[in-house]
Image (cartoon, rainbow, N blue to C red; front, side, top):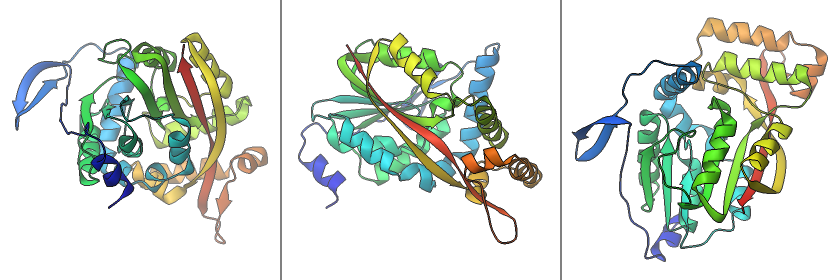
Length: 302
């Protein structure tokens, strides 16, 4: 029996209920209550969210299978520092492939799994069900306007997603709103250095590869988001991840000509940039990989 299955078998709270909620115009499909999203005039923020939904609708399967998303010491650190308990209610925001929810599920009574993109959430549901998770509920949700009552959750997680959010500060405020007093927010995301040149390069590359990318923030920005939302920062860690270039661009369904242009941009950058991001090439001069920075923040609601 796996550790996940063993943890589930010992708890009386584990159960499965699928509840995918859209925004309006209720319909029924295979017995599941689904709400279709209405069409409204789109601001810049809504346009970015539409880009996110389009991108992850097209690439959902790739993110479930992504090695860099389903593995990593950061997931283990999230569990080590989360102060989990068997009676807790957890919320995973922008779950993507469901990998964070999978890590959290054995340690809580229930995990609510959310994503802005219905197709992505469907794939996460399939993945988690195949892994034996039975204590999850699923709901389409905008991270900047969470459809939950205040003080609903003991723990909130969000991993490798906020760089897609138009208003990161509003997202953190929503996290603080739905957390119970004493509750913990565990945040993992890519970040940029305070050096403006490195910041510009990193965000340019990310946006080029994925138009739904918003902004990777600095440490100082993240710390201000937490403190302004009333979350006390208890722990900060930094780590790096290497992107294997072919896999990274394939996952985003990047067109061959755009991939070539992006390759030339990266390889044509100055030595300071290439050194910082550890740009590597093979013996034929082909781009193999590069790294970027990530931040792990643990905040508690007073």
